[in-house]
Length: 234
Image (tube, rainbow, N blue to C red):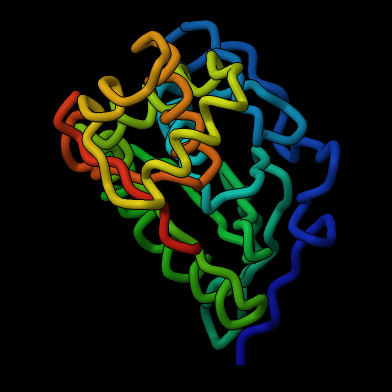
């Protein structure tokens, strides 16, 4: 029987100011300066090490089912089978640890498909997944660029995050919320029935989507024909 895995620090590292378990990043392997995330849900360090990680953070920021997330917030010590029935101690630090609005913890790894296919990762991915699930009851998900950069979902999420920040009219938010509670409306219809500039209506409806009060089909590019309705309870 394999030894039970352990996690350091407790609570998966999700606290008000989590420490980063890996060494701070300065440059990527290709010599590019790493970027900084402006996600409001992000706890602790904001430095991302790749554009793929940046796009993953955008998905989490735009998804109202996630309450908060942190980068490299804990380390998992797990055990891999070795010769003669022994086990080898290994350590894994995930890219992202996220908490849903229901308090569920999800561990996420953003990895290029070419790297995920390499033997050294393929051999340990299932061990890491089993350790998280069987020892801690936590889902472990590996997302490649084909998952993260699926369009038009990613572009829609970028629009939600960027435009929601410009919403500053609580009265307009109430009127838009009332309208879509009565029945779904297209964006074009909302433009016509709301006595406010189109830019304000758009920013406010994006803010309602960001807060989980409204929804539209992320599989279609947002436009005046997009239909907005009251969000289903999550």
